[in-house]
Length: 224
Figure (cartoon, one colour):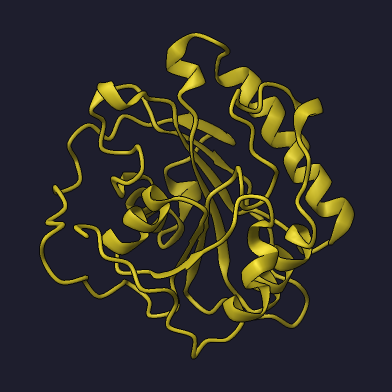
């Protein structure tokens, strides 16, 4: 199945900062920018939530890789294509760096599918997080010949056993920040620490918590 769509924009960490080996997975709409029921259809519709760039900058200054994982079904609905997605994300990156020079996104992964497409990347399925972990923890330039790439993961990743115990993460500091149960489910499935935020406030709501390595995150049960 076509997708997900991966945008890889490597950058060095801030001066004096060492990579800590962990990844902060971030939902987009409702976490970084204000979401809309009719989707974000153009760069002009982006409204950055307060303190979102500074929160991302905080994570980078602590050595986290940052990876946006976002469901964007308008692509498969035929409302717009991946080229429009790239334009929206380019503006998103520009706005964040204007507010905080360290607010860089290492990778943006987008699921273009609808619920009925039964893909393995649309959250709460963890395909985007598993793919991000795989790519960011190897040498991404070994597999990337351009900044944008459409990857067909198909059934590459194992089905999630939602009724089992939460698994151990690749890195104990890995986290998922989102505003919906689907975000929490995807993070739970890879063992990440979970931080849920109100849609109208976004990442500002947990800004202090996500820089505390002793914070175990929010409780979430996928079968409750």
